[in-house]
Length: 298
Ligand SMILES: [Zn+2]
Image (cartoon, rainbow, N blue to C red; front, side, top):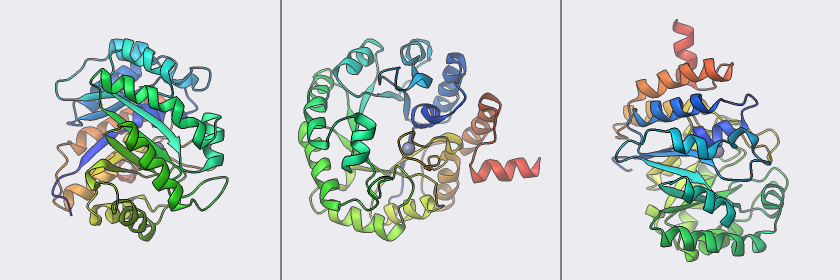
């Protein structure tokens, strides 16, 4: 069990990309300011995917131009291809996140390419980003289940993970895109992957669809994983994964870790305040348990 854990905040990107309300640039900038002030060291700010596909994040360059960067915080962005990388480099991102799926149908829906045809698109992105000295993280979606195919073959997860690592990425984030994973499965997948891939290179990314996200994190911790993605307020979903609900909420993850004596360096009250502030911005209650308790008490 790790003594400390790194939380990678994905709310501004993974969360807001799936909100029906388009959040104004100035509110995004304020969101990043609040998150930077909480002690988080990794914040995924936005996406340089073609704005045609994700209009909610079309202002990525403006957001990067306007945020105040705090020392020691890495401000990353999602990048789909070389064109996106160009925009990201112009915006002076600190780190690059690429993505693909472990299941063929989700990859085709999301990226419009087969898994095999995605590698040649990503490979030059990783190469250029590394040449610029930027850390690169690879998201693997649908690791624990696919909205179209159901069960996902672990061999496919291994294959995609290997190929991405061979390209030179620094870290894999294994995503439960539709939130179907259960703890025993997390243990099984991690045990299988870590026979070939170093544990330190693996992060876990859970969604809250069936209420198993916290138990999945517990399973990940027990398998020695110490990097977890989360989104303030539990924002998010996936437009190409019908029925998928939000990311596990950062404040809920912090609640559990801190009371287990696991350090994160993040101030949970500041994250909770940010979740409360976000409700005014997006015009609805957020899905986190901590925030629900706070609302009930006030
Ligand atoms: Zn997510």
